[in-house]
Image (cartoon, rainbow, N blue to C red; front, top):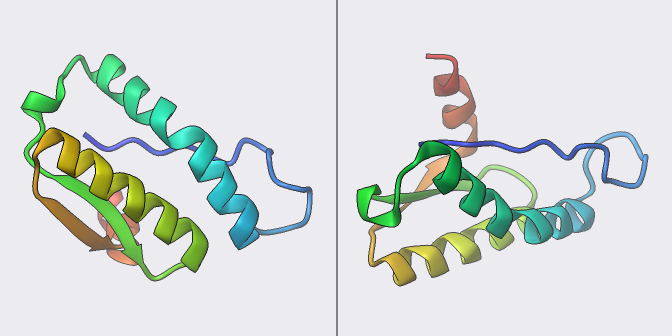
Length: 95
């Protein structure tokens, strides 16, 4: 299961992504996104084998935020965790 969410125009109107605002957006959305992913997919944490997160390359603040949440989820669900390369994930997403 993989789900993504866009910034939905919630950043400051400055072109591009700003690290602090992007991390804040991730912080505000990530728990709801995980809940939604589980609901929409109809699966429970028992059906998940591993928690993956983007470890880079990318902006430090958002990467740290997501890594922290992934580690917490992996510990709560007692699952292994794997950091993945952002660029490879994007390239493989099309497969």
